[in-house]
Length: 61
Image (cartoon, rainbow, N blue to C red; front, side, top):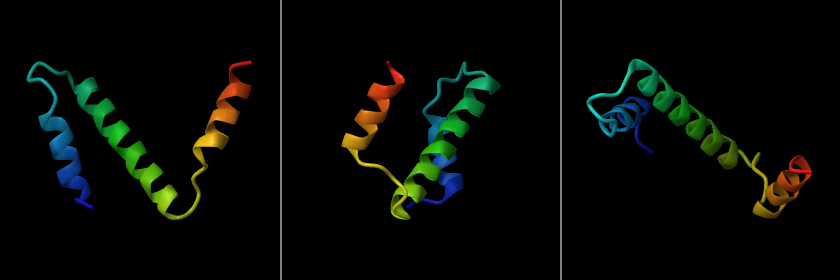
């Protein structure tokens, strides 16, 4: 896995030149959440697709 700095720099480079500071912060926040999720999955803390669908169905009731 790339280091965090490289991941962030790559994400920022994909933004348009006209982006705002809020756009950059949001992009970095999303990257952080993705990294957290990846670590949780590696640690066996994820849920299956079937379970996710069940939970979503309950939330949408």
